[in-house]
Structure formats: C-alpha cells, structure tokens
Length: 234
Image (tube, rainbow, N blue to C red; front, side, top):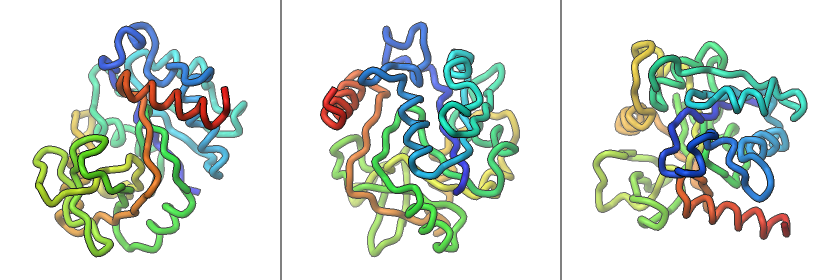
C-alpha cells in the first residue's frame, strides 16, 4: 500500500496545559500515547511505511516511536527545521521520503475508515489528488466542501459558501507532482493546494459515513477518550 504522511508538527496551544511539555502526539488517550494508537491502526490496515512530519518537541516522539520496528512498521522522520513550515511546507519537505503518491492525515485525527478502499478509489479516479469528505451541515466545524453528483466542485477553508454542506474528513491522497512547483523551505497551508485542485477539477472525493475524532481541543480529546473507552471497555 501507499506510504502515509502524518502531519504532527504544530504547537498544540489549544491543548495547554496538557501540551506545555509534551507534543500532542504523545497525549495519552485511554492509556496509550495517541501516536501509538495511530501507528497500530495503520499497521492493522496493511500500511508498512510512515513518515512523521514533526517539529516542536518532536524529539520526544522519535524517542517513543523509534524506527517503528516494534510496531511492525518502517517509520521515518521529516523535521520542519528552524521555522514551522505549515501543513503544506512540511509535506513538501518530506517528499523525498514519500515517493510519487501517498496518504496524508493529521497527527491529532482518528479516522474510522478503510484505507485500502480509499487507495483503490484514488488509483481508479484518474486525478492527482483525493479528499475524503463527510456530510457535515456545520456539525463538527464550518462546512467547507461543495460536493454533489459524486464530485467535489470546490473545497474552500477560507471562504465558506451556504451551499457547502460537507467537510474535509481528514484523510487525503496526493501525487507528489501537486507540490513540485511550491518553493522549498517556505511555509504554506495544504488547504490552499486542495482548494486550487478542487476548482481545477483535479480533486476526487470519497464520501465517508462514520464520524471522525480529534484530540486538537479539550472537547475533542474528551470525546476521543470516551470513544476508546466504550470501544475497548476500559
């Protein structure tokens, strides 16, 4: 299967004081560091290669995860460097470790989804990128995807439109070519790449029907902990 990039380089200020001395990836969720849950999950899905895009306190993640061999994975690390590069800049930096096509999602996300089915859709769609989406109606955040007749017409994180009723689910697949023309070592947002692809008709959509979870906020962390407690009867 395609390799996976996990964007885990943010400052996690919304989770203070929990993340004042540890990175968000190491926050315990029902007894386990969140990144370990993510990596175990990827292994169970048949993923073998993961690139962690890290920066702030990232050495702690590297110390806990190591080379991934104990989890049945090959784990590599891509560092932002002296300045935070944003989600897009971090991916651009990681391209030498990722190859021509790869999954990408966020270090604070838990996504109940079948990666193999998403990959199959991408390989069959004939487009340079794919975004997973879920019908949202402003439930989890402001809806930012115009999707109808099985097609993404527009993704726009900066200018919302009333007819947008879907939201980015958090898992994407990109061809490295969509990042090739972006300057090296410059901060930019992956959302802008997605937007440009969507209005060019180059972004495929894969609809998901089970909600996502996230630990980027205190409310989200509590919901995610409860999800795992119920699932595992902790």
